[in-house]
Figure 1 (cartoon, one colour):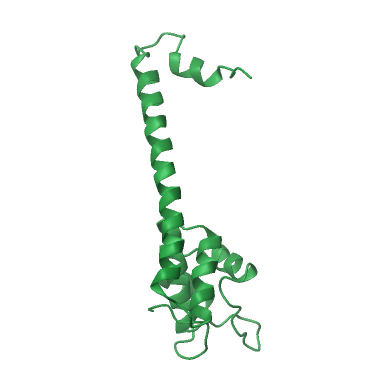
Figure 2 (cartoon, one colour; figure 1 turned 90 degrees about the vertical axis):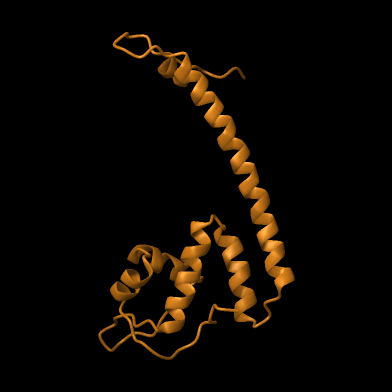
Amino acid sequence: MGVAPASRGGADLTIGALSEGTGVNIETIRYYEKIKLLPAPPRTAGNQRIYDRAHRQRLTFIRRAREIGFSLEDIRALLTLVDRHAVTCGEVQDVADRHLITVRAKITDLRRMERVLKDMKAACAGGLVPDCPIMETLFQEEDS
């Protein structure tokens, strides 16, 4: 698999360089370290974090997985397989299948939201009238 397990070696990077090279915000990198998705790097005598190629690969994997909507728990599950050197397509497919169910549910919700917004917009004549059906709908209390 293309994701390297946490290991040392090659291309020392500061957190700023790692952030710039991966497109991941510095605070997000620190958060991933805190929740142990990204292993804590060694530090210099001046207490500066020094990242290597494996950190960069792992962070790129995390960023890409987040971009397509994988939860942090699913990413942790996938990285655990990588770290144990026990990645099988079947296990990865199980995680992907769970994610696909979530994505399909979100698509259904988004289509419903689209219909509601379209209906609200159709009820609005626009212009400068003080009564706006869109605002009224948003302020309307739901029946319990």
